[in-house]
Image (cartoon, rainbow, N blue to C red; front, side, top):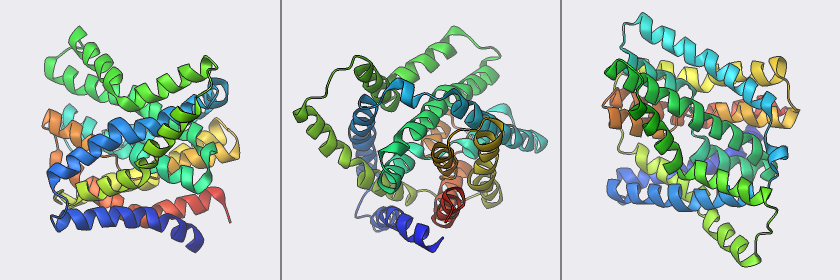
Length: 309
Protein backbone atom coordinates (compact mmCIF):
# COMPACT_ATOMS: atom_id res chain seq x y z
CA UNK A 1 0.00 0.00 0.00
CA UNK A 2 2.80 2.44 0.92
CA UNK A 3 4.66 1.59 -2.29
CA UNK A 4 1.53 2.23 -4.40
CA UNK A 5 0.88 5.46 -2.51
CA UNK A 6 4.42 6.69 -3.24
CA UNK A 7 4.07 5.77 -6.92
CA UNK A 8 0.83 7.74 -7.29
CA UNK A 9 1.91 10.64 -5.08
CA UNK A 10 3.83 12.54 -7.83
CA UNK A 11 0.65 12.71 -9.92
CA UNK A 12 -1.34 14.23 -7.07
CA UNK A 13 1.61 16.48 -6.22
CA UNK A 14 1.33 18.05 -9.68
CA UNK A 15 -2.39 18.56 -9.05
CA UNK A 16 -1.44 20.23 -5.77
CA UNK A 17 1.08 22.42 -7.58
CA UNK A 18 -1.61 23.56 -9.99
CA UNK A 19 -3.94 24.22 -7.06
CA UNK A 20 -1.31 26.38 -5.33
CA UNK A 21 -0.61 28.29 -8.54
CA UNK A 22 -4.32 29.00 -8.90
CA UNK A 23 -4.81 30.02 -5.28
CA UNK A 24 -1.81 32.37 -5.45
CA UNK A 25 -3.24 33.88 -8.67
CA UNK A 26 0.04 33.01 -10.38
CA UNK A 27 -2.14 31.04 -12.77
CA UNK A 28 -5.38 32.88 -13.42
CA UNK A 29 -8.77 31.36 -14.19
CA UNK A 30 -8.45 32.52 -17.80
CA UNK A 31 -5.02 30.91 -18.09
CA UNK A 32 -6.42 27.67 -16.68
CA UNK A 33 -9.20 27.70 -19.28
CA UNK A 34 -6.70 28.07 -22.12
CA UNK A 35 -4.40 25.38 -20.68
CA UNK A 36 -7.39 23.03 -20.43
CA UNK A 37 -8.27 23.72 -24.07
CA UNK A 38 -4.71 22.98 -25.15
CA UNK A 39 -4.70 19.68 -23.27
CA UNK A 40 -8.20 18.68 -24.37
CA UNK A 41 -7.93 19.54 -28.06
CA UNK A 42 -4.24 18.97 -28.74
CA UNK A 43 -2.05 17.11 -26.21
CA UNK A 44 -4.55 14.51 -24.96
CA UNK A 45 -5.97 14.03 -28.45
CA UNK A 46 -2.45 13.40 -29.80
CA UNK A 47 -1.84 10.84 -27.07
CA UNK A 48 -5.16 9.07 -27.72
CA UNK A 49 -4.65 9.03 -31.49
CA UNK A 50 -1.12 7.60 -31.23
CA UNK A 51 -2.19 4.91 -28.80
CA UNK A 52 -5.31 3.88 -30.74
CA UNK A 53 -3.51 3.98 -34.11
CA UNK A 54 -1.09 1.38 -32.79
CA UNK A 55 -3.85 -0.91 -31.51
CA UNK A 56 -5.94 -3.47 -33.33
CA UNK A 57 -9.70 -3.14 -32.83
CA UNK A 58 -9.90 -6.87 -32.11
CA UNK A 59 -7.35 -6.40 -29.33
CA UNK A 60 -9.15 -3.40 -27.83
CA UNK A 61 -12.85 -4.23 -28.05
CA UNK A 62 -14.08 -6.52 -25.30
CA UNK A 63 -17.82 -6.97 -25.01
CA UNK A 64 -17.56 -8.59 -21.58
CA UNK A 65 -15.52 -5.67 -20.26
CA UNK A 66 -18.14 -3.20 -21.49
CA UNK A 67 -20.97 -5.35 -20.08
CA UNK A 68 -19.32 -5.67 -16.67
CA UNK A 69 -18.48 -1.97 -16.57
CA UNK A 70 -21.99 -0.97 -17.65
CA UNK A 71 -23.58 -3.30 -15.09
CA UNK A 72 -21.62 -1.90 -12.15
CA UNK A 73 -22.00 1.68 -13.33
CA UNK A 74 -25.73 1.30 -13.90
CA UNK A 75 -26.24 -0.07 -10.37
CA UNK A 76 -24.51 2.93 -8.78
CA UNK A 77 -26.31 5.29 -11.18
CA UNK A 78 -29.65 3.85 -10.04
CA UNK A 79 -28.66 4.05 -6.36
CA UNK A 80 -27.75 7.74 -6.75
CA UNK A 81 -30.94 8.35 -8.74
CA UNK A 82 -33.12 6.64 -6.15
CA UNK A 83 -31.54 8.58 -3.29
CA UNK A 84 -32.03 11.86 -5.16
CA UNK A 85 -35.70 11.12 -5.91
CA UNK A 86 -36.21 10.09 -2.27
CA UNK A 87 -34.99 13.59 -1.31
CA UNK A 88 -37.54 15.12 -3.69
CA UNK A 89 -35.13 16.43 -6.33
CA UNK A 90 -36.24 17.19 -9.87
CA UNK A 91 -35.02 15.20 -12.89
CA UNK A 92 -32.23 17.61 -14.03
CA UNK A 93 -30.68 17.79 -10.54
CA UNK A 94 -31.03 14.04 -10.11
CA UNK A 95 -29.32 13.44 -13.46
CA UNK A 96 -26.41 15.68 -12.48
CA UNK A 97 -25.97 13.93 -9.13
CA UNK A 98 -26.11 10.49 -10.73
CA UNK A 99 -23.48 11.60 -13.24
CA UNK A 100 -21.20 12.67 -10.38
CA UNK A 101 -21.57 9.23 -8.81
CA UNK A 102 -20.33 7.30 -11.84
CA UNK A 103 -18.22 9.42 -14.22
CA UNK A 104 -14.52 9.32 -13.39
CA UNK A 105 -11.77 11.67 -14.46
CA UNK A 106 -10.35 8.96 -16.72
CA UNK A 107 -9.32 11.26 -19.58
CA UNK A 108 -7.28 13.91 -17.78
CA UNK A 109 -6.11 11.79 -14.82
CA UNK A 110 -6.61 8.08 -15.43
CA UNK A 111 -5.14 7.54 -18.88
CA UNK A 112 -1.91 9.53 -18.36
CA UNK A 113 -1.37 8.10 -14.87
CA UNK A 114 -2.08 4.46 -15.68
CA UNK A 115 0.08 4.50 -18.81
CA UNK A 116 3.05 5.65 -16.75
CA UNK A 117 2.27 3.26 -13.89
CA UNK A 118 1.34 0.12 -15.86
CA UNK A 119 2.52 0.70 -19.42
CA UNK A 120 0.66 1.02 -22.70
CA UNK A 121 -1.21 -2.24 -22.03
CA UNK A 122 -3.51 -0.11 -19.84
CA UNK A 123 -4.63 2.00 -22.80
CA UNK A 124 -7.25 -0.39 -24.20
CA UNK A 125 -9.31 -0.92 -21.01
CA UNK A 126 -9.18 2.78 -20.07
CA UNK A 127 -10.23 3.84 -23.59
CA UNK A 128 -13.19 1.43 -23.53
CA UNK A 129 -14.48 2.83 -20.24
CA UNK A 130 -13.88 6.39 -21.46
CA UNK A 131 -15.73 5.77 -24.73
CA UNK A 132 -18.61 4.09 -22.86
CA UNK A 133 -18.93 7.09 -20.56
CA UNK A 134 -18.92 9.53 -23.46
CA UNK A 135 -21.33 7.61 -25.69
CA UNK A 136 -23.76 6.20 -23.11
CA UNK A 137 -23.82 8.45 -20.07
CA UNK A 138 -23.07 11.78 -21.75
CA UNK A 139 -25.99 11.04 -24.07
CA UNK A 140 -28.20 9.93 -21.18
CA UNK A 141 -27.81 13.16 -19.22
CA UNK A 142 -28.71 15.26 -22.29
CA UNK A 143 -31.80 13.10 -22.86
CA UNK A 144 -32.92 13.32 -19.23
CA UNK A 145 -32.44 17.07 -18.81
CA UNK A 146 -33.79 18.14 -22.19
CA UNK A 147 -36.61 15.59 -22.06
CA UNK A 148 -37.74 16.73 -18.61
CA UNK A 149 -37.71 20.38 -19.65
CA UNK A 150 -39.35 19.93 -23.06
CA UNK A 151 -41.68 17.13 -22.02
CA UNK A 152 -40.49 14.93 -24.89
CA UNK A 153 -37.40 13.68 -26.71
CA UNK A 154 -37.33 15.54 -30.01
CA UNK A 155 -34.99 15.60 -32.99
CA UNK A 156 -33.24 18.61 -31.49
CA UNK A 157 -32.16 16.50 -28.49
CA UNK A 158 -30.85 13.73 -30.73
CA UNK A 159 -29.08 16.35 -32.86
CA UNK A 160 -27.46 17.79 -29.73
CA UNK A 161 -26.24 14.34 -28.70
CA UNK A 162 -24.83 13.50 -32.12
CA UNK A 163 -23.17 16.87 -32.54
CA UNK A 164 -21.69 16.65 -29.05
CA UNK A 165 -20.10 13.29 -29.84
CA UNK A 166 -18.73 14.52 -33.16
CA UNK A 167 -17.27 17.63 -31.54
CA UNK A 168 -15.64 15.74 -28.69
CA UNK A 169 -11.91 15.55 -29.53
CA UNK A 170 -11.36 12.42 -27.41
CA UNK A 171 -14.02 10.48 -29.32
CA UNK A 172 -12.65 11.76 -32.62
CA UNK A 173 -9.03 10.97 -31.72
CA UNK A 174 -9.90 7.40 -30.67
CA UNK A 175 -12.10 6.85 -33.75
CA UNK A 176 -9.56 8.23 -36.21
CA UNK A 177 -6.76 6.28 -34.57
CA UNK A 178 -8.66 2.99 -34.78
CA UNK A 179 -9.56 3.74 -38.41
CA UNK A 180 -5.87 4.37 -39.15
CA UNK A 181 -5.04 1.07 -37.46
CA UNK A 182 -7.74 -0.78 -39.41
CA UNK A 183 -6.29 0.49 -42.68
CA UNK A 184 -2.90 -0.93 -41.59
CA UNK A 185 -1.11 2.28 -42.53
CA UNK A 186 2.26 2.59 -40.79
CA UNK A 187 2.69 5.84 -38.88
CA UNK A 188 5.66 7.71 -40.40
CA UNK A 189 8.51 8.27 -37.96
CA UNK A 190 8.17 12.05 -38.23
CA UNK A 191 4.44 11.92 -37.41
CA UNK A 192 4.99 9.42 -34.60
CA UNK A 193 7.67 11.66 -33.07
CA UNK A 194 5.37 14.67 -33.40
CA UNK A 195 2.51 12.85 -31.66
CA UNK A 196 4.86 11.55 -28.95
CA UNK A 197 6.22 15.00 -28.14
CA UNK A 198 2.80 16.68 -28.23
CA UNK A 199 1.13 13.85 -26.32
CA UNK A 200 3.87 14.02 -23.72
CA UNK A 201 2.45 17.35 -22.58
CA UNK A 202 -0.85 15.67 -21.70
CA UNK A 203 0.21 14.13 -18.40
CA UNK A 204 1.77 17.12 -16.56
CA UNK A 205 -0.48 19.63 -18.30
CA UNK A 206 -3.71 17.78 -17.48
CA UNK A 207 -2.73 17.24 -13.85
CA UNK A 208 -1.70 20.88 -13.44
CA UNK A 209 -4.94 22.04 -15.09
CA UNK A 210 -7.01 19.86 -12.73
CA UNK A 211 -5.35 21.50 -9.72
CA UNK A 212 -5.64 25.02 -11.09
CA UNK A 213 -9.33 24.51 -11.88
CA UNK A 214 -9.97 23.20 -8.36
CA UNK A 215 -8.51 26.38 -6.87
CA UNK A 216 -11.47 28.46 -8.08
CA UNK A 217 -14.17 26.03 -6.95
CA UNK A 218 -16.06 26.82 -3.77
CA UNK A 219 -17.29 24.27 -1.23
CA UNK A 220 -21.02 24.22 -0.42
CA UNK A 221 -23.58 21.50 0.33
CA UNK A 222 -20.81 19.45 1.95
CA UNK A 223 -23.02 16.57 3.07
CA UNK A 224 -24.36 15.94 -0.44
CA UNK A 225 -20.89 16.32 -1.99
CA UNK A 226 -19.52 13.87 0.57
CA UNK A 227 -22.21 11.33 -0.39
CA UNK A 228 -21.47 11.75 -4.10
CA UNK A 229 -17.74 11.39 -3.44
CA UNK A 230 -18.39 8.20 -1.45
CA UNK A 231 -20.50 6.83 -4.30
CA UNK A 232 -17.80 7.67 -6.83
CA UNK A 233 -14.71 6.54 -4.88
CA UNK A 234 -16.13 3.51 -3.03
CA UNK A 235 -19.44 2.25 -4.43
CA UNK A 236 -18.52 2.62 -8.10
CA UNK A 237 -15.31 0.55 -8.00
CA UNK A 238 -16.98 -2.01 -5.70
CA UNK A 239 -19.91 -2.70 -8.03
CA UNK A 240 -17.81 -2.58 -11.20
CA UNK A 241 -15.45 -5.10 -9.56
CA UNK A 242 -18.44 -7.43 -9.15
CA UNK A 243 -19.26 -6.87 -12.83
CA UNK A 244 -15.84 -7.48 -14.39
CA UNK A 245 -14.54 -10.10 -11.93
CA UNK A 246 -17.60 -12.28 -11.20
CA UNK A 247 -20.57 -11.55 -13.47
CA UNK A 248 -18.70 -10.92 -16.74
CA UNK A 249 -15.19 -12.10 -15.91
CA UNK A 250 -12.31 -10.78 -18.00
CA UNK A 251 -8.55 -11.18 -17.71
CA UNK A 252 -7.06 -10.09 -14.39
CA UNK A 253 -5.00 -7.18 -15.74
CA UNK A 254 -7.89 -5.57 -17.66
CA UNK A 255 -10.25 -6.07 -14.71
CA UNK A 256 -7.75 -4.39 -12.40
CA UNK A 257 -7.34 -1.41 -14.74
CA UNK A 258 -11.13 -1.00 -15.13
CA UNK A 259 -11.74 -1.11 -11.38
CA UNK A 260 -8.84 1.30 -10.74
CA UNK A 261 -10.30 3.65 -13.34
CA UNK A 262 -13.68 3.71 -11.59
CA UNK A 263 -11.91 4.67 -8.34
CA UNK A 264 -10.82 8.00 -9.84
CA UNK A 265 -12.50 11.24 -8.66
CA UNK A 266 -15.49 12.98 -10.22
CA UNK A 267 -14.80 14.19 -13.77
CA UNK A 268 -14.42 17.91 -14.38
CA UNK A 269 -16.63 17.90 -17.47
CA UNK A 270 -19.68 17.39 -15.21
CA UNK A 271 -19.06 20.87 -13.85
CA UNK A 272 -19.23 22.23 -17.40
CA UNK A 273 -22.51 20.38 -17.96
CA UNK A 274 -23.90 21.74 -14.70
CA UNK A 275 -22.91 25.26 -15.72
CA UNK A 276 -24.37 24.83 -19.20
CA UNK A 277 -27.76 23.70 -17.87
CA UNK A 278 -27.68 25.86 -14.73
CA UNK A 279 -28.20 22.86 -12.44
CA UNK A 280 -26.52 22.08 -9.08
CA UNK A 281 -23.31 23.90 -9.99
CA UNK A 282 -22.07 24.32 -6.41
CA UNK A 283 -22.64 20.72 -5.32
CA UNK A 284 -20.83 19.45 -8.43
CA UNK A 285 -17.95 21.83 -7.73
CA UNK A 286 -17.74 20.61 -4.14
CA UNK A 287 -17.98 16.93 -5.17
CA UNK A 288 -15.06 17.36 -7.56
CA UNK A 289 -13.04 19.13 -4.86
CA UNK A 290 -13.75 16.58 -2.12
CA UNK A 291 -13.41 13.49 -4.30
CA UNK A 292 -10.11 14.69 -5.77
CA UNK A 293 -8.67 15.41 -2.33
CA UNK A 294 -9.89 12.07 -0.93
CA UNK A 295 -8.61 10.15 -3.96
CA UNK A 296 -5.03 10.83 -2.86
CA UNK A 297 -5.65 8.00 -0.37
CA UNK A 298 -8.47 6.01 -1.96
CA UNK A 299 -6.92 5.54 -5.42
CA UNK A 300 -3.72 3.92 -4.06
CA UNK A 301 -5.87 1.76 -1.77
CA UNK A 302 -7.98 0.48 -4.68
CA UNK A 303 -4.91 -0.06 -6.88
CA UNK A 304 -3.22 -2.02 -4.07
CA UNK A 305 -6.42 -4.05 -3.63
CA UNK A 306 -6.97 -5.00 -7.28
CA UNK A 307 -3.33 -5.59 -8.21
CA UNK A 308 -2.43 -7.32 -4.96
CA UNK A 309 0.93 -7.26 -3.18
